[in-house]
Image (cartoon, rainbow, N blue to C red; front, side, top):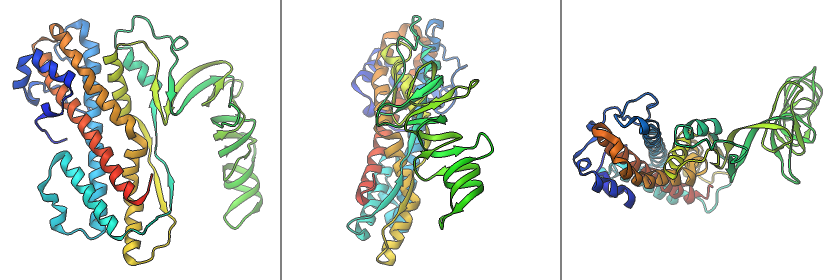
Length: 406
């Protein structure tokens, strides 16, 4: 991300750190060569007091992770917007974006793309969109929180992790059950209707979809097998699965006598949480607000995202509209990944991290000379990441909103 006068991006609590440690205002990125966004700081010596070493590393890691992720998001959004504008006839002069740099350049690129879209877009465009979905690792959360002062309060039975707004995937030693009218994610034997993929655990599986193997039965005009499949059956609708269901299940999901089942429902036996998909991971260890914000930022930055796909089902009415549809199918996924996958959770996490760093002023006695210098770099990275994440989301909303894609 482009270097800038970062103090104008700092939140009020962060300004307090600069006031408390005056030498920070004369510091630049060279004061802390060890702090490189995107790197692993697990073994880095920042020169802080031994009692604060682990927690400081967590803070530095969060700022570095979020900075790298925000920079990547900005680059992806800018690239997609410039590609759309170029495909729709933007001139070389327009693509110079009046010399804008940094975050302003991303905004300008997407404003240009939006204006080009509006010039040729029909009133409505019909989309078939497979949305982006991001997952957060419970194990990574626990490892991060464990480096902070938790005073032994890391019992998931007392404070179990929850996936607010999404699904918590668990490894269940027993049976995983869906609630009434709600399907659960299932990688096991489904006692109800399975949608997704049914994998043979024996010779074959009943199939009402595309068979990756040999179909023993009739095959329709679309290549779907209606019979038994010697292999894997990718289901086109909810059907009974005589093998292992990898998808969603309407009833219960069971593992074998020796293997746990992966699911997102209620487990009737011992279970281990694995990941949070499509939501915010909360709970886990009892830690202070700064550590919680730092771990959440690292998780959001390192989220594993399934990219979206876009197909336009409208018919093009002209060559210009055909060009529009083609460039949208190629470039909207990058914007939707920011909007749907990372979304507000990413932006809010970046801001929460930046806000939480004001408490660094309470630990100046533990920082040491080298640590004080590193704080300046960490503050700059966190402030820039918060600003950059906001710009990336806003720019994505601007373009996708222009064509009604959500």
